[in-house]
Length: 597
Image (cartoon, rainbow, N blue to C red; front, side, top):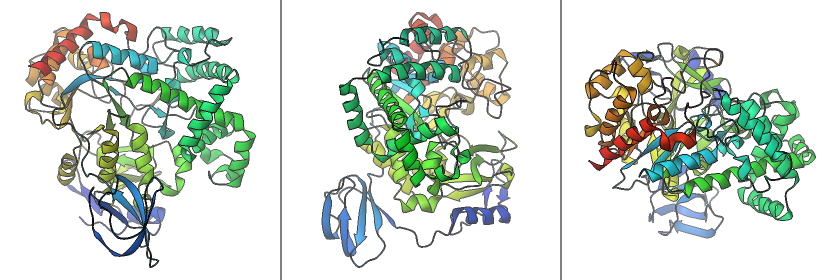
């Protein structure tokens, strides 16, 4: 295999070990979409304490704005961060990344807990959809049982206009969070007239087995607008301080939302003069919609406050970072100069999905991302890493290379494009260390062996599933997340009932617990999770679907909204009823007992 100056591989080895050559036409099209990388802006990664001598005198400006003046060697007290180093002779300025090279990972970490698809985990007080008050109740339940980890589906923000995207892996923004997470009743000022009536209408939606995001958001938004109209001077002052702290990133998101309410969810169909966030027409539109821009900024302040309330409960919060964004959404509008038009991220054909996959997510252009010192990636990580918590990175092999599929083509027409060296891993390690948060990589499927070694050396946990492992959890590695399944794969009850039972996965299950046909789902679940608990893995987590004996998986890849309500089927048991659910108690007690063995 060879890789050209653009980072494009001339082919790949498939899951069967066969060489697949990339199409010359695809390679040429990728080069055109990426543009000429030229010499590029250098990025220099060093470890804390480095005092390397420079080739010449340079001006050093730290990430926080502190000016270190002219230096001829790196000061040994350089803080972690992405700094700016400019040669005094007029040479190319560079990004100076000070990274520990390894993620935060306590040596004795052996946590257990649950994973939840937040919108589907509703309580009797939800506004038709699972929210952060429900997550707080889940965290309290897990804590009271002795658990110390709660992993959540992505909290990323959809564009808040109809139709609201159901998939958390197709967000408008990975930098900001969904306003549907807000428990309206807990917002200061929620006693204003009209909110209680809207809440009653929203709770009436709990009788529906499928979450209707559009109806939920209509009621939430209207109630929040009532509260917004009645806010106090202290509320206004607090928001202005927070907006100033968040800077251009929050302003860009809030402007996008205000424009989307006027012109539709995809910026690609807006009037041409609004197509770029830096255009003068966008500034004028923001002034005209000043109240709506402020409103959408305020919603993010509310989400952050309620998320902090969850964090205070105690269990480690493990959030999820999706691999990409909606091409018509906010991040793609704000960072369009760093993304490639005409291509989508996906996966080549393999034994699991013979036709391959196209996810509709525009890829970063590697050299453009590097030229800005990887700061957008650092921003995403900072937004997703809750202090003292954890982060699951979806499709973690995307930190090494991404599979580009041309628009209108099939995955068989795609090609892999690589990032520079291990610099993205150093950015992950940097932000993990700053947040004191553990990082998990979703490394299922085809991952190059050398990159697996890099992930391990960086302190990123691998993902181990009962469905894919021939060996029992008791012999799995310690630097891992141990689970039975994921949101895209069969549940235990689906496997046991035979309604969703791939032969190889079922064989791995029965190798562990014996035949499952005819056995009560709660019995099988408890036995599997006791094995899972005995794993040396740093995390052992049970999905709420398995805890509750749900047959349907949250998502079936490749199906459409007409075929299936992916990401939207509510759990059959209310969050406030979980402490009294015998099957849930049995499974989690078994998981906890396994950790204690």
